[in-house]
Length: 163
Image (cartoon, rainbow, N blue to C red; front, side, top):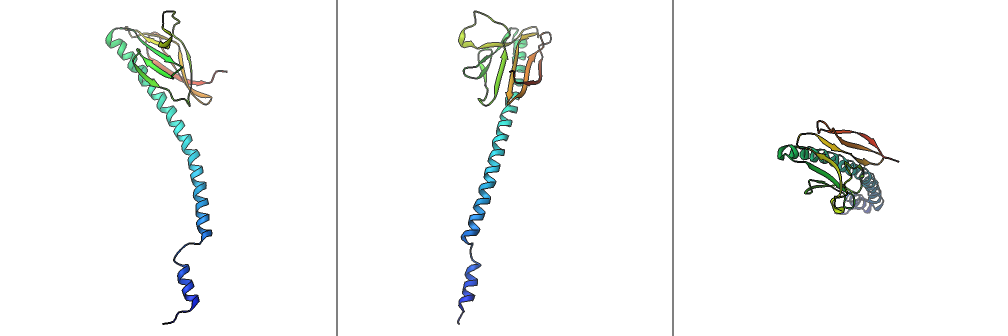
């Protein structure tokens, strides 16, 4: 059985891809990966921010409940050197380095050791609280946390970066 060169060539051609076709597919795949990579990074940053805000809110509610339950004052401090929010000197929450933090202290006390951080909120045993303000920023906007001095509730509001 004899086959012509043209018939053999047409059968060989249908069995694979040319170098040009492979290069086009690789370029399109590279562009897709680049676009998804930028979008994925933005999604991760947004996710970290929202999770941190939820965690801070949860930790502040737990600190308030602990103060009422144990009948003593519970302090919430912030250590900017290591970016930790600490509850009663033990439980802590890491704040990611990509997020900005601004704070106003609840009280300035000369007896507070330098490594203990800045007391931002103090929840009292009677359910009340005293405190400053904690702002978590993503870019120029974020969430501000305050406590109601009479009820001890945690209040949040939209905040902008201070100049």
